[in-house]
Image 1 (tube, rainbow, N blue to C red):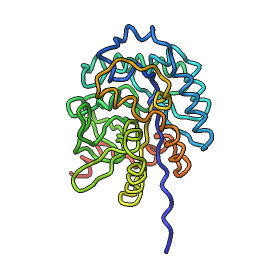
Image 2 (spheres, one colour; image 1 turned 120 degrees about the horizontal axis):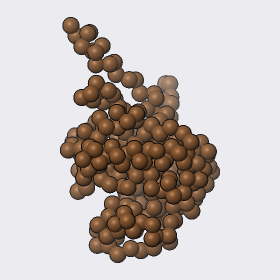
Image 3 (tube, helix red, strand yellow; image 1 turned 180 degrees about the vertical axis):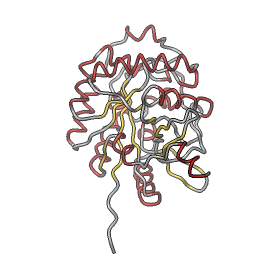
Image 4 (cartoon, rainbow, N blue to C red; image 1 turned 120 degrees about the vertical axis):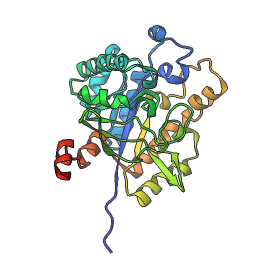
Length: 297
């Protein structure tokens, strides 16, 4: 019997610092970000070393604010062979912005990131996966601004994000404008009618490692699809300052920080990874809308 070729997964990093996460947004105004000691360079370099050990190339979705303050770090990531994407400028949830405000933030971020990295940015990931049903208009803005793909939709139920009935795997979306954009959703393992989040961020830190192994195996064997991994540089930093927070935030943000790097090391050792853009370029593109109309007449 012919053996099935192993699946190459996609690795991604949301490049931001520990105090910029949504969990602290109601306690730390953007105007105070500059008063915090940055840990993002040290943590990102730690991630780069981990990837180099495993010959892994990934996608780094960069916060524009960070790119503007430490452009040499972003150039260092690009020079190491990783794809550079956009993670907004100020880490606002897209669902809280108007289309005009989103476009302004997006342009500011894109300019800062491209200036720092010296490469064109083609991919976007919204802070807190905040492209949800009421903010799907953001995909039109992204396409208009020259983005080739988005990686913001999480097909799960969650108190802060998610479109539970969204497609689970990479696909091209026809937009109202006639443009198209590729959507690369976060990894989920489907059991019955329910999607369970997997293979990234807090799910990697908080849930037992057997669950992550099981989810990756299930996606590979049942769905024959690549797994989209994600995490943040601050998640390999157990020594980061502890900020005042409610009990839910403390659990979500601080639990498992000491385990993250070892878990990533295991995953990188057992699986092959590439930047998200590689995956996008292999997905067959839909025919233009005009061609579809002509074919149906």
